[in-house]
Image (cartoon, rainbow, N blue to C red; front, side, top):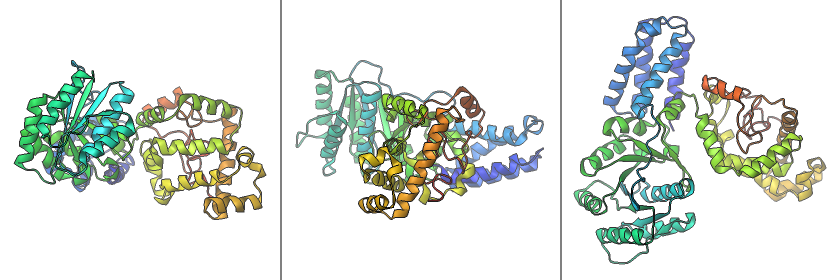
Length: 490
């Protein structure tokens, strides 16, 4: 998300930071480019005008002109205004589920916005991270198989779903869901309401009557971020008829512009509570204004990356891996686990987008190198090896390479490339064992938590030590697969 905007803003700010003193004309020229960048990102015009006006008041003042690094000062002002536009400097607003159970969450939105999937994602999050007992109920009596879809999702994540009773109205289903949630002692009841392809009075009346019956503490509007300004208009219309308490933006991983996210809070006054990015049950991210602003300005989100690592990586397994690496041992079984963890944490693009300093090396990395299918192919090659070959890579001669390639359905050159990459990673593992690595790593990725020195550097906005095309990603011995420097030659 925000890739196009990040690219444009990075170009603008590179010009500013490359200069010494800045004149008022320099700042105004930069702000004109920022304005165009925001409009191209599909941010609402009134929001852009207000944003630029606020930045300009501070950016042409004496604090910038007299600053030791005026370019950096302007970037800070833009960052702070982005944070304010996205929701302020405080912590993310939690879901209102602290009252007497069952706490009711009502989901609203247009058909196809991702309501049902988001219902399951929120239920999964409440179950796994907050240890809540959740009941989901589908009130969509019009869309074919809507109820069955929620039932299937509930089974896959281990969350209770209200049994289907054919012929009931949405209002009757809401009443039955309330009764069952009370009788069975559920902490949270999530009502997945029906949508339409377009806004109409019948849908609004139905949603309003359900809200009157259920009296939800949270009414979340689910909007597709790919629809840009249409999503903002949808939010405005829903907010006029329903007591909305927050927004959830879906398909954030496919939205390179981010205009909806940047406009919604300013236009509706409602907090964005979650971003949905992917189909997996855990692909739901708490919306944090400061961290999102950092990503937009190419500063990364290392806290978010560490959180993802902690959520997706088995700690005992990570400690076992760290102990092995400390002894300088790294075989193909270890490598397969590392590759699988990259996928779990969000893939190459997801991880790199959250690392500070990566924007500077983006031009040196092609989309093909960030394609997660390459990782799956590499895992396939490893699984084509025998147990002995995995444990003792030095045994893999020409004949074995040909057999492994045939078993994995790839060319021998890809096997050679993987062997080369493993040697690099094994060498890095030995260096780590001797305490020569500059970065402590990320949990589960070969080195535990970042060191205090690294955290200080991250806090100062500097790029991660060792993060360059030659050394790859620190924390993964030898860098990430597919990145420059990781597998240049076979």
